[in-house]
Image (tube, rainbow, N blue to C red; front, side, top):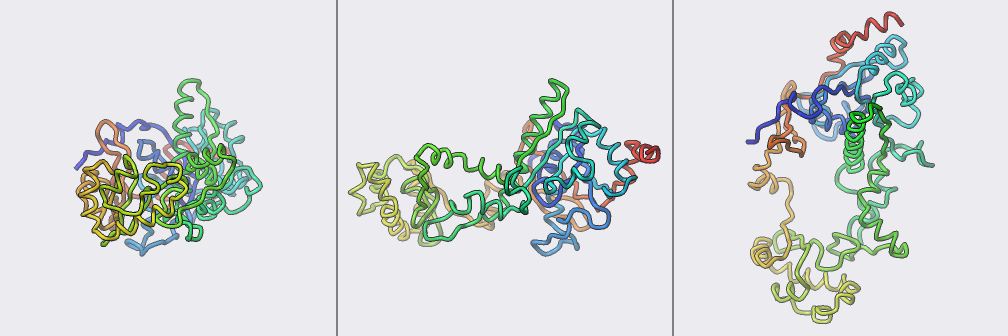
Length: 393
């Protein structure tokens, strides 16, 4: 069991973050900052709160949404109606004392409530203001900024899978998660910059930009290759540009991923594969014949079990791996050695994952669960003297 670094020893301890965001992308950024030690106060609508509270993708745990609790753990919650002058005055007083503000509303929404960057920068010039949109300030700016739709427009869905597959989305909200990670990186850089020159900053990203950045490797190739579109492998696909044997193959009892090998000849001899002779000494011809080579390799891989292939290939410097489902992954000793699963609080408790970082050989795990809607409103506004400001306003 790895030790968790105490919250007050983490690098962002003492920083105040106001998290106005909802659903996944912005709250994921807030989660990362909380894991790093920041005090994150979630600002929600009275009565309903973040719509993610009611976005159930699994059965409730203790009557509540596990996803919301996992992505909003280690935060506080206050409620405020941005249309209410007294609530807006209290929020303005709180913004004046904050270090970071996060929001991911549709373009223009928060600005119409007087909390856009240009407004709050007048209140607090040292504030780092983090913003996530769906498609940035483009012709698509007013379209719904949702993960699946961003995957569809980014080219990622078209790129993924084998040639005979329809466009294939990734099996997770990759645009939301990557945009949250990108915003976290930008906010941390802006905080470092503020420590140097004393000024705040506006940090912006979008789901689309995050997915384009994810594809920088293949898009760089495309941009410098006459803008030719790559062809996905007909089968066993793993990468649109990399030739055989790079791919995923069915074994007698599972699947085997094959990445790097010293040479096709080395692999063919080791696996006793016939039928590859025309391409063994001609890399250019091998690239052109990727689908034919994949088919020959696939037929041979299917004759043995995954364990047999690993025992043969790994000692011979063939980079390969078994394809695991979650049950198999979590049964592996390596998964347990990472100590990734943590228990967070709440009425019944919830198992979730800690963040991926370790600092000073300690994890950033935290057992503090997500807050009840508005649970900290009175205490937070009183602590920061915001009620007095609202009364004067």
